[in-house]
Length: 93
Image (tube, rainbow, N blue to C red; front, side, top):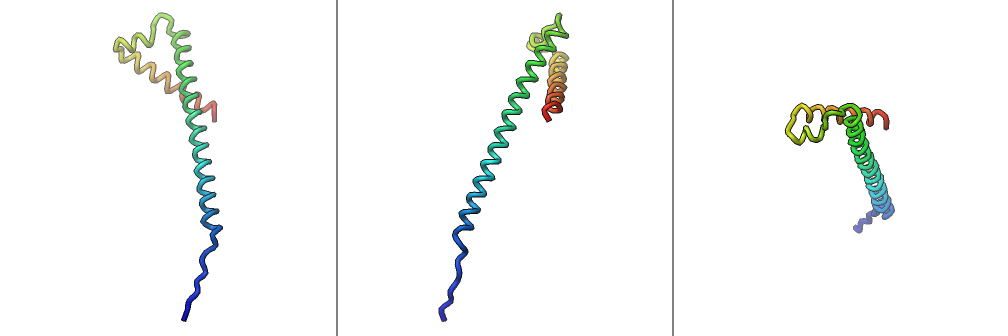
């Protein structure tokens, strides 16, 4: 006895492939947007850190102190960067 089987329609793999590419494209776009957000946030943070350094610490050059090996200045600078990053993250949400 000959048995006949029905193959699934060929549209299903094509549709699944199209959906996979749509998903991959959307994921790549989200990744690109987040990378741009990260780069812009880092640039703003560095500019604000330099502005705070110039405005508040007129007698002390923070970068020079860090290059001399001043650990306290490095901790202070990194704490400022973390604070600025938190402010930027809260402002851009």
